[in-house]
Image 1: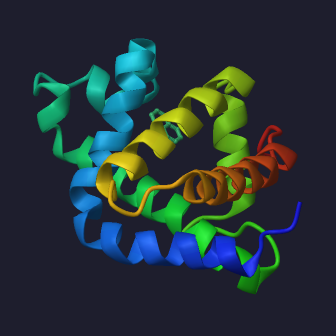
Image 2 (image 1 turned 180 degrees about the horizontal axis):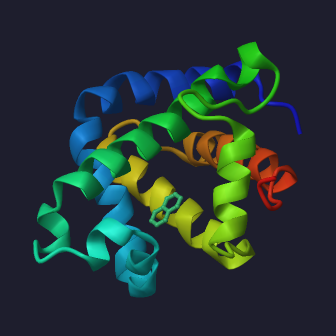
Length: 154
Ligand code: ISQ
């Protein structure tokens, strides 16, 4: 389904507010996933080999922040670009990394739930069923784009 101008406006409006707090919202998004699926922490070598509590780990924080920004900016660019795009990485690399870790549909669903919850809590005064739908659709398009690249890196 096409991403409409109205949906783009909702995504842009909420991202312009969330952007300033990306350093808190990114980790919040990741910790929601770790709450639902604690084993997801095993994906990060820098967590396994560290004595610092996960919520204080600076590498995890900066990684979570860039993943969050990348996800949101993909949504913001969706209409202009005509398809889901990512910066500072390529869909090929993202596909290969998700393939390598054996990511399956349920993981993408948990992540979608965590992302929507994070946004809802970040902009409660703007949140609406339409906004939930706009972010959900943008997320689904990003996931679809990653899935088409889910194969071993050559
Ligand atoms: C992979 N992709 C996006 C977000 C994530 C959060 C936790 C663990 C893995 C993830």
